[in-house]
Amino acid sequence: MLSMLFMAKKRKNTLEETIIAIQQGNIQLQNELIETYKPFIAKTVSSVCKRYIYESDDEFSIGLIAFNEAIQKFSPEKGNSLISFAEVLIKRRVIDYIRTQVKHQNLSFEISTELDEDEFPRSYIEDELSLENYRKKTDEELRRDEIKQFIEVLREFDLSFQDLIEQTPKHADARKNAMTVAQILAGESDLKNSLLEKKRLPIKQLEKYVSISRKTIERNRKYIIAISLILIGDYIYLKDYIKGVLEA
Image 1 (cartoon, rainbow, N blue to C red):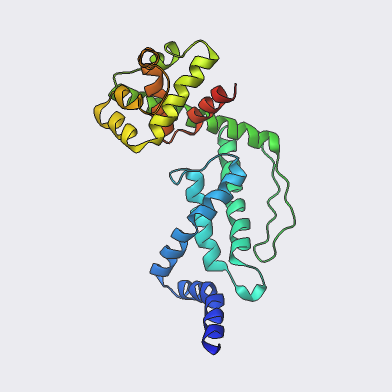
Image 2 (image 1 turned 135 degrees about the horizontal axis):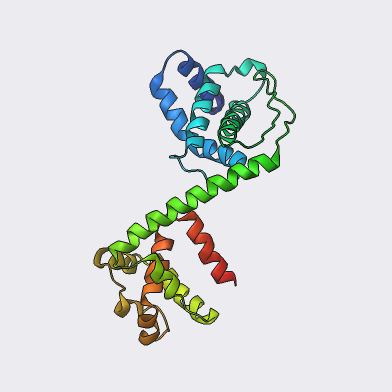
């Protein structure tokens, strides 16, 4: 019983002890803690930017630096948790970064960031219109980059983005059937591996999984390959397009 109480007490103090050790110069623990909290950092940054955040994004780097800053400045004696303190600091730093970017883009931007790092603010005011302009611009750039990346992948399969447009089935039912085939292909490892390795549609194997005729699959071959590649890859905006087609 005493050993259980000791273990429980130890678990409770682990984070606090870790932070103290980091503040005393333990780089290994610092790196381990940051790695553990990367999902939290990304989620906090995303809540400000209103979009999915990749680790390669500048905003994520700002959040990472802010989290490290929170570790160095955190003091449990003030009665606040590291997470709460880090969340405020990350949001402040990301908002400051956005304000700088907006200034460079010649957009009006007003924001109240009166965040005392010793006392957490109850609220701060954002100019949603200016933020939305920034987000739209960022989304447009990300969408263009994603399409460029996808075009390069299509070339490996002797396809073009124009093929995706021209080969899209005209009827809604036909599009949904083709997407169903693509979803099965992307979800089954043997089919997916065959597609990626041989750079062609594994029609014979697909026939074992779907009730759609071989002729129909062949007719929509290019479209099915393109959609499968979107589902397999990390394409946030193109996947939204697929979702829209399926829900139509």
